[in-house]
Length: 143
Image (cartoon, rainbow, N blue to C red; front, side, top):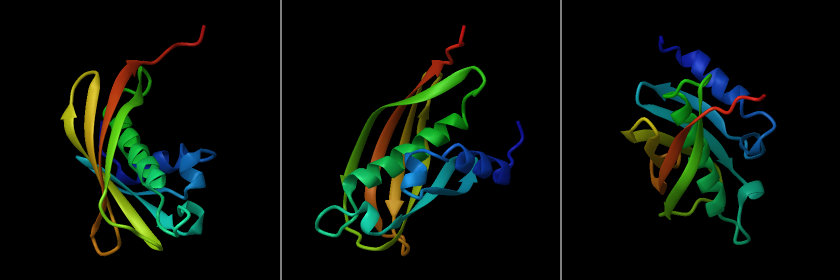
């Protein structure tokens, strides 16, 4: 399979329509041989009551990017991906602007993928560090 950056990003953004990713305004913006990157605006729509980026929104961003990244390493015709565990360390608060999540593979097995997802602000300051485990399953056929 040839690496087509524009096609991969278009696919990731297209399948996000009418999902939580669209609700949170997550946009996939960069991809390489070993990473996938997305951005999400930080505004009152994803704040917690104290006016800060909600930790759950950070986790949703991380799982969205890590799960989409796993899909790049499987045969989508025959396999599907499910997140089975995610952990997050919230290191810095953010009131407004944009955060960027970059998923990098730690382990790629036949049935398990382990990702590190760093969420940073516009200045590259680490906001949240996540670890995501995805299981790779055979795609169920509809009969």
